[in-house]
Amino acid sequence: MKLLFKFQEAEPVQTNSRSAVCPSLFTDCVEAYQNHLKGETNGLFKIKPGGTDSTKVVEVYCQQEGLMGGWLLVQQRESGALTFNRTWAEYNSGFGSVDARGKGEFWLGNQNLHLLTNQGETMMKVELEDWEGGAASGYPLYVSGYTGDAGDALATSQPPHSGMKFSTFDKDNDKWQKNCAETYGGGWWYNNCQSANLNGIYYKGRYEPENTPYEVSNGVVWGTYKTLNYSLKSVRMFIRSTAF
Image (tube, rainbow, N blue to C red):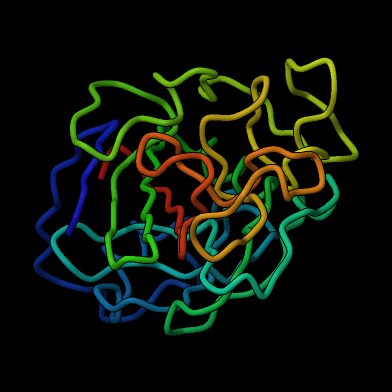
């Protein structure tokens, strides 16, 4: 089963050649796809998220294979081996790691996300997998023209997450009188509080909220795909320029 939700349409770019020599570094996975000798292969690439004049270098995983490449992986959960209940500083700089096969749990870092999305208009793709073999994929976070049947848990559900600031347990930017990140166990774009949270506590499928520390639905959740007391098996978040 494959479910699809789209927040921004994008057409694949046909590329017929690769540079004879690779530039030292690219600004994102789209540039790597278009110019690197191995640009159509999934794997790790070194980029300069602040632009080619920047001194900051980051190694990222690029999803390049298939009809539409150029996707840069910014978050992944697949086993629960890594806690995502982290400080503002940790979310800012990033934590965890991903290998050349795309395996591993990590957060790229809000500073890197800021640099990458400031290069131009950006869309996000989210891939979700449940414990019964179902999967969903699509392009969320800012909404224009939703289609599909996985459900838009970020913008049209209540409370919506679109336009919210990022919060952690030690830096509260949500609209609740208490601290959503402290209660729900992970950094996220909380409102008051959540319809989706891919950085929540990792449970294996359905769980009982009354058995959690704050008696809330604090799993890895996407409320319009599965109920909020169902924690997903794996999730991945990607970004890519809308110009590609």
